[in-house]
Structure formats: C-alpha cells, structure tokens
Image (cartoon, rainbow, N blue to C red):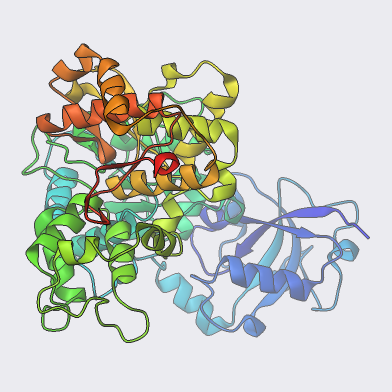
Length: 546
C-alpha cells in the first residue's frame, strides 16, 4: 500500500549557528522513527561518525525565522514546549498528523553529550580522500593548476572538463593533497556530487561540509555536472565568487567549453579558467595544462605500475600505446590490462623486448576490443551495442568517424540533435572550442582518444555487418575514392583529431581517403592502427570485400 512522502526539516544539536545546519530528509510516512534515525545517520555520516543507537530523536514545531538562532541558544529539547522525545517504534504518520509544518523545524537529533561537545568544538571538513599509490603524481600539471588558482589576478574559479575515465578525479585528488601540503592552514573541502535533500540551501549544504563563511577556503567539486540543475548555487556562489573569500575548482565529465550548462545563468569562463583534455596554453600560466597525461607523466605511470624487470616493454610499444591513447588514463590502464595475461600476470608474448610489432602481428583486434569493452574505466566512455543500435546515435557517431568532428549545426533532424547531446552527456564524445583550428566561436564534438574512435568504429560495423557496396577491385575502389577528394580539405592548415588534438599535416590525405572511402562503401570501412593481417599491414580494412 502506498503512503505519502514527508519532507522533514531536521537539525543536529551541537552545530552553531543552528540556522546554518538545518537540512531536509524525505521519507515515507509509514516508516518508523527508527527508520528516520537510520536515514539521518546515512545522510550525515560525515558528521555523525558514531553508532546511530546513541542518537535521540525529538519531534518539534519551531518556526524557522530570523530568531531561530536565539531560540536555540543553549537549547535543551526536554525543556522546550512542543518538543517530544520519540520512541523508535512510533510511525511518522502518527507524529505528523496533518503533515509537518513547511517553515518549521520538525525533527531535532540529539547526540550524546560528549559528541555534542565535540561538534561544538569543531566543524568536520570533507577533506579530499587519499589518491591511490600506483599513479603518476603529475607534479608539473598539479603545480600549474595550483598557480593558476592562487597566483593570478582573475576570478578564483577554474573548470576542469574531461570525459569518464580520463583521470580527472585522480587529478582532483592530487590537487587537493598538493594544496594541503603547501597551505596546511587553509581548509580544503571536497564536494563529491551534489545532494540537495541534505540541506535547505546551497550555503547550508556547504556549511555542513565544514565551510565557515569568513574563512579563506578552497572547494573542489568532483562530478560537478550533478550541480548543473542548481541555479542558486551557480548564480549566488560560483558566478559571484568575487564576493567570497573562496577558491573553486570544478571537475566535470561534461559541460560547454565556454558557456556552462546551467539553466537561467549565462556564466562564461575565459580560456585561462578552463582545463580540458588537450593542452591549453594559459595567457599568464606557467605552462600548458591538460587532463590527459603528458608523455613524462605517462612514463612515470608505466614505471610505477609496470616495472621493466617484469614487463619488458620496448620503447616502440610504449610509443604506440601513448599515440593510441594520447594519455587518456582509463584507456592506458585498460589497454595494458588486456595486453597482460590475467592468469599469471606475464606479458602474452614472451620476448626479451616486447615491441609493438610483436604485439600487432599476433593480437586479434576484435579480441583486444572485446577486452577493452569489459575494462574498468574505458568502458564507461564508450557506448554499448544497444546504444549504437539506436539509428540516430549511429548516425551521429558515423558522422564523427567520417569527418573527425561535428558541430550542432551539422544536424537538422531533432532526433539527431538529441542523439548528439546524449553522446556528449554520456561521455562518448568530448566537446571543445575550435578557435585554435581556424573555426572561431564554434564548439566541436569528437572522440576522447584514437582508441575510443577505433572502438566505436568496430562496434558500429559489428552492429550493422551486412552492408554491401559495388566495387570491382581495390584499384578501381581507390581511384573512385580519390576522385571524390575535396581540395579544400587538403589545404586546411589545421585538422582536428580525437581529444581535440591537432592532426599532423601528413595525415590530411589519409583522413580524406578515409572520409571519401566511408561515403563510397556505405560506412563499411574500418581502420587498423598498425595491426597486421596476414602477410602485411593494412591501414583500412573492408570486411565486405575480405
């Protein structure tokens, strides 16, 4: 039998001023006081870090107004008219007959006296967790981020945008630890996601995390895309950050590279306040910064996780791994996990020096891609077969494969427009500005790395494997492809590749051949990034003509 949902304004005694620590709990009216106590403990476990059986629950009806702090000064619920200590077995419907008062304090949570004194003496800060030990510390990148946050004269907020599995959470943790080391007396508050039900307002929620309004404070928001709905947070805090003695670093898996994805706010961040997958040259920054691992950081990660005495990777192998992943942390990690045998931890090829050639001529690309699709991090940023089975999604991804990137204006059909946003929000595509590529004031959508691109290409073909086309022989096919070349595409100085990283000039003919080849073959061309087939190596593979 269904029951009504109660919205209860709650307060934990011991925090001061009380008005800053009123929070909201939603619970069914047929639940008991004991259920409510367990819910409060779960919602506020960073503050109530002791056994829930020690909590006493009082019902109340105290008006929440400007005098609330005065009313609750040295408050003792047992002496306050209208407060009643509740038995754990009592149903909430029997307490709030007619419903709880909306502008009233409904529930008071009383910890034992020693815990109340502890809460009065301190505010618990939500500090950044310790990062894993087997990672690159990314000292140069973290140092550059620190300097851009603290040592330059512009609004003290930075957005870090990277797709799922790209390493942005690890970067956030490293930055938090770095700040604590260099500025040990400055509070660093870690906000992981955004749970509105815990607080009446954004300010109360942040105070519950340990924020004192007049203290110089650093906020690190992880998974900040979960805050995009909260207009008050963005308009009253982020957009007005100059009114607060605070620094804010926002880590999000998606978001417009210029105009943040928050309704009813036009908050725009300049280039020197944004970090993305690719290298961004700050006007005043000490060095380029990016979410993707730079080559020295990649080498550092390899040396820690894959010591050479056990994993004899040749430099050609590591060069190719870095080229294929462009430093995407999740892609690097899961690709190497597939390379290494799950049974004994040894490299699948027992050679004195494991080269890329050894790997490419013996590994079945489909088995490799199957392993990647089961990885821990990489699979978060690629679509499932059921996703690609949606025609609009398949059209969008096919167009990105064909042209390297797409813009919103490339799609007129509403289903295709919605599919583009789905690909973006799911992390299958990354968004970045195209100013540096001769396309000002435009946003491009592209794959996070060449490995992501290759994975989606094969998954698309495996989803629609029965496509055929007419071609007498390879020479005829090649000549027909070349006849479709667009001269403008061959003269462009800037070509955009996965991760919004510039493609080398020598790639322009290969890219144009691929684009025209996909058109001519009805999208049935797939690529081999230097993987061998039979007696040679193929850059392009046409399964329908094998």
